[in-house]
Length: 295
Image 1 (cartoon, one colour):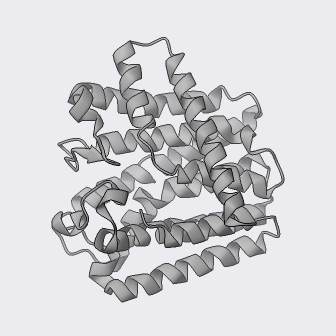
Image 2 (cartoon, helix red, strand yellow):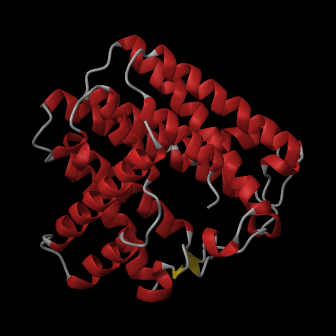
């Protein structure tokens, strides 16, 4: 598969997803201010890596990726809620996200909190109301998403991240944070595709291993970009992690060591994909893209 094909796939499904989310929010029987605040952050840009991973996993099974649209939308809504809350003054206190004013800077703290709450709960509603999945699949997807987004997943990672501020973390403590705060929703994206396509137990385990390595690679690349990245592309100040005194892979391993660690996880991720014996070319290219991305 060529990069042109991957670019076309990403562009097409990113557009479909954004149209789906905008329509779903616009049709809510809710106060206009909360719909505006939800839509503002949902449409704030980004590559939509998590939903694209879900669509690409479905494609690996030779199924139509569109069947995963409600799940992809739910995933992106929950990811977006976490960003809105992350940016709040009581958390990271950020004024900009992807080059745009953060939600609370536009709508105020109260409506930003409520917009996050609304996206979190509406995400689960989208899965429950999905028409192309049976009841057993929906229950499994809801359970997996709750686990990966909640206290055993992303929220647990965010908690450990806050506790670790202004401290010198061990490598294990830092990896726990990244496996949970960043990695768990990436893992869910891939596992959701496997659930929708009724993967075998062995395939499911291989996809879980793939996604775990990919999630760590994603965060290591993020840490490297915080040192080497382009501020205009990143949409945030370069060196913000250092300024916030956060433990990062380059800080613990050196920049060269972090790059070696990145390549180790990318290689392990690809090896797991190969063992699924599916058409994983798109996922392979996405793995390369995550490893080499510049923002």
